[in-house]
Image (cartoon, rainbow, N blue to C red):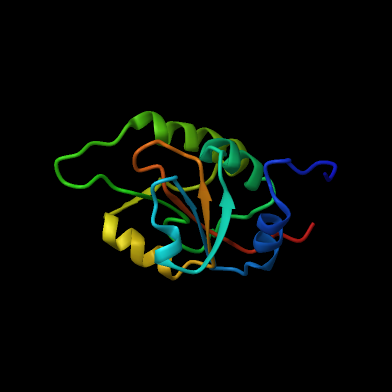
Length: 144
C-alpha cells in the first residue's frame, strides 16, 4: 500500500502506467471483452468497475492534448443501444481529473478491437455494463 495512491491500482497496473509513453493507449475493458485474444499485455483487475478505476488512474495519468479524442468508447452495434449512464459515470471521473478533455469518441466495435490490438496494454476489469470499454491515450506529463 502506498500513501496517496489508490489501492485499486495493482503493482502491475502502476508499472504499466509508468512505462507508457506519449501517444500510448491503454484499454480498460469490460468483463466481456476478448482481451486475451485481442492482444497486447493483459492486466487482470477482476472485480473492479471501470468508473472507480478511472478515478484512481486519472490523477496519475495525463491524457494526450495533441489529438482530437484522447478518450474513446465502443459504439453500440446496429440494432442495439447504449446506456447513457455508463458514459456519464466515466465522464464524472474524467471531468474531475481532466476537465479540458474533449468529447468521448465513439468507435465501431471491430475498429475498437483493432485499436485495442495496437494498445500498450489491456486491463480486464469486472465491469458488466454493455459497451463499457474505454481507451485512454497518454499525453506528456507536465513538469512542475
